[in-house]
Length: 121
Image (tube, rainbow, N blue to C red):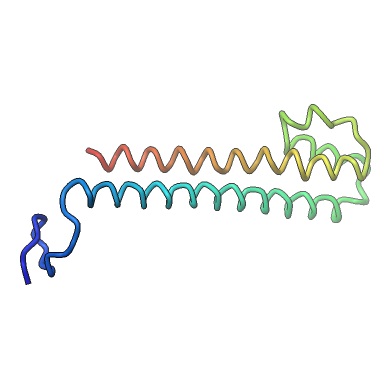
């Protein structure tokens, strides 16, 4: 077995130099995009579960569930805040869910960039 440039022992068939770096960068980028998609999906699902729980458990309190749903989805809820019952739930699940998915993806992207920048030092 031959010693590699990085000090590891291998068969000598491993990629060296820029080819190995390019492969690692492409793989890391792909993994990063998967992470963004996963975080967006998780945020959307958590938002959906929270709203459905609010919708079905706060029936007895008039106006409370609608108010909570509007507060949860600010600022996007300003577009549909005056809707009633079923339409409020539908708009909140779609537009609010998309807002939370984008927020989740942005937080994941920011963490990914910070980790990448710290890894370069």
